Length: 74
Figure 1 (cartoon, rainbow, N blue to C red):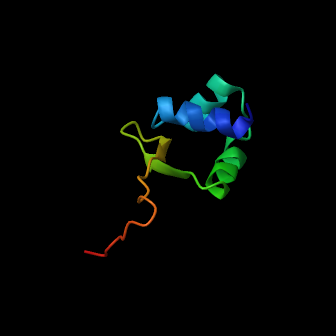
Figure 2: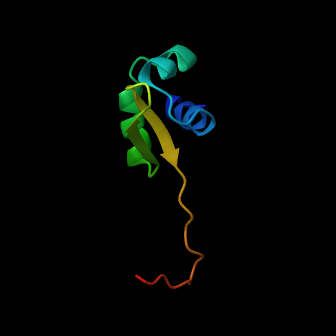
């Protein structure tokens, strides 16, 4: 399992994890580089301010349209 896939799996199971929590849980000091790699691979990783004032990261799951399905702007 690559560092990026480990990070994605962790963020899916721990939405809102702070950078320090990611470092402690995954021993991943360059987590921001792995977040960039995940975004480049097509994952939607967002950073939002948590209630305690820290930044938290989570993966936004998107539902893709079925092949051939038309998507309207309405």
